[in-house]
Image (cartoon, rainbow, N blue to C red; front, side, top):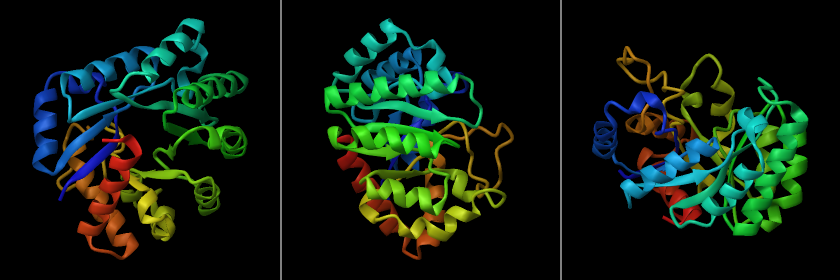
Length: 261
């Protein structure tokens, strides 16, 4: 069973001491390809460096997360345009809106999100998107650019059925994480994950965050890593009422096509 982790924060400091082992454990569990998330200017540079160090295994995204929108300046915009034109960078993002924490003012988030939407349109690259508690504004802005970019994935989807179908209506892909394995807050996803078309469903760990609660025994360090993508796949397959091999094959094919792997 081969899997693609479309969203792993492998530039996180928690991976520095055992990075090679993390990749080896992932490969042993069938996770042979990973997309490293760029969520800041520095993080995007680091994601690209990892992709260059591990060709054929790692690829990168380049973007600025809404938490860091306040740091987005002209130099950042110019550099992201350069990064988005490189072969190893397969999507623009992580970008979007986050009104849950509001680490950056909302007007700044909106401006920076639109600037990155414009970069994706200019470079012809897919979008790797983040949205939390900002669906109305997020959807309105995305609609203005959706037909100008080749593809878009709403990463780490945790929203409502209504939001899901709003994104599907825009021909977006949906990224499902270990959130669905959380019996405290992910049960609503189990009710409608089967409504995602097979060709638009992709899987991700969002490592080192969102360790699936179905992992037994739970590691003491609580760090998520790509090897645990299999647990997410198993949960999604169960909730979709299909064999895990089918969920794995379809999500892998969707990721390969989306990112051009």
